Length: 162
Image 1: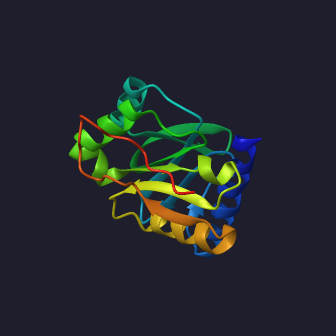
Image 2: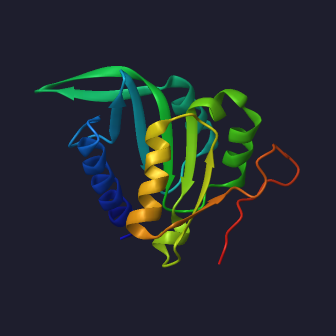
């Protein structure tokens, strides 16, 4: 149920993007603006090594008719339906390259009935900014910054606001 609710949010968001003139896909979760792909990856959880490999690889699948092509994603947004593990947050915060092109959104509080989303977004992506505005306007979600945006590998936890 959690995942399907977030899929519906992404589907509605892509409709909003199309109204802005941005290119989207019916079956994949990406938005193209000025030849830059902003890829949304919806997951419950992921192992940090898998996250690192996917974030470094930067691949995005684009369907063209009956065939597909692989493009480089300029930006990636990881949308979590469960709180990401501390080790993944440590990895994200310890790698400055990730913060330029990767955003993390923890929607688990929202899927549990609280109108809160915790984010780590240091990108300059207009699409991700619009996603945050969309969550606030359409779903009355309060976007909270991650409590400790500096890497602290001793104690790195994801804050949750009740």
